[in-house]
Image (cartoon, rainbow, N blue to C red; front, side, top):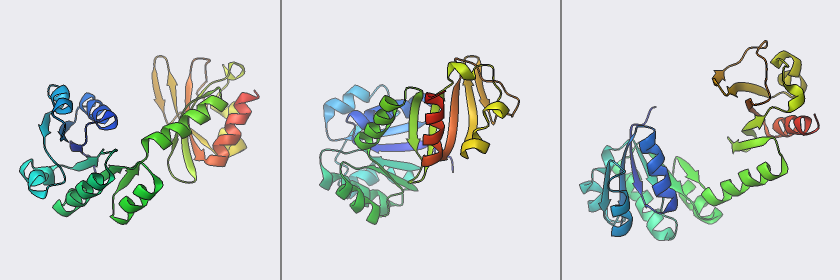
Amino acid sequence: MKFNQFVIIGLGRFGSSLGRELINLGYEVLGVDRDEEKVQELSNILTHAVVADATEEEVLRSVGARNFDCGVVAIGDDIQASILATILLKELGVKKVVAKAVSDLHGRVLERMGVDRIIYPERDMGVRVAHQLVSPNLLDYIELSKNYTIAELAVPNCWSGKSLEDVNPRGRFGCSIVAINKPKGMIIAPMAEDVLAQDDVMVVIGTNDQIEQFQQSITGA
């Protein structure tokens, strides 16, 4: 399902950053926050921004929250407000509800409420930065599930000029290079004969163990 309209409740650092990026990607965004200063700051950036208390059902009804494809609860400093806003979005029938969690306990509560996706910005960023620090060739790291990861890895100098068939990540490690980001553009679903270059970035998907083994082979290459 493609989502075109988002309502973001809470315009702090996470909510405002999310809203700005969704606007840049061409989507419609309604921002809701009790802080007039935060709303004013984004009033000329988001599609709409309103000063309102999202823990009040009538308020969410009045701003038309039920008509949005996806609701994001980005409240971080008030867990009670986060939970109340999440409950109301679910009760109003918003198609997909995503919520920010500030702790594992907060996340477990949101999970029991049937939230479609729970985001842990600080924890997830910490994990990504840790992987980047210990793996020089690792440019980005996203955990798709408990077992699967997608990673962006820089091509080591000694692999420049080699084809994917030569590198053979699937045969050697079980993971797959699903794209190659070259300076001139992205190659999606590359073929075995596609050749790697020094400035290329490989987009690799596999289990956590497969990705780790592949990273180690690059580091030692």
